[in-house]
Image 1 (spheres, rainbow, N blue to C red):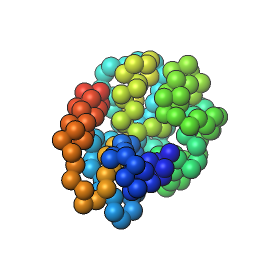
Image 2 (cartoon, helix red, strand yellow):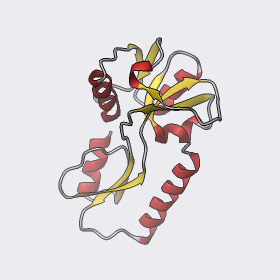
Image 3 (spheres, one colour):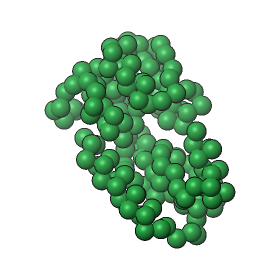
Length: 168
């Protein structure tokens, strides 16, 4: 839960949190670890660089999503609404990895952040970029005004390097 992680950063229970923090309150510093945008997750592995698909050309069929209160899913729903696209939502799961597993089993498509490539590289799932782009960047949040430790800077670099190595 992003709000619980943000609360722990604010109360200094933890030094940092990593994830899709699209909005943060005052007192929190947000550092981009990886630029990312929404992509169509499809069953099957295709290592070729896929051409982008438009929102209005998303394939028909069942779609698997994240819960409606999830900020990623909220971005998806806003973007679909803006383009007048209606999808057949067949299932909802809390974790991106579970959604990807269901896509891999052929139970539907999903609209997920590009940073999900860290997971899809281990699965028989392809990510196709969607145009126009809807940013879903991956961040590290820390307490504003607090100097990052050497260890935290090293961890941020490690996350960035790993994500960069898996992002298409």
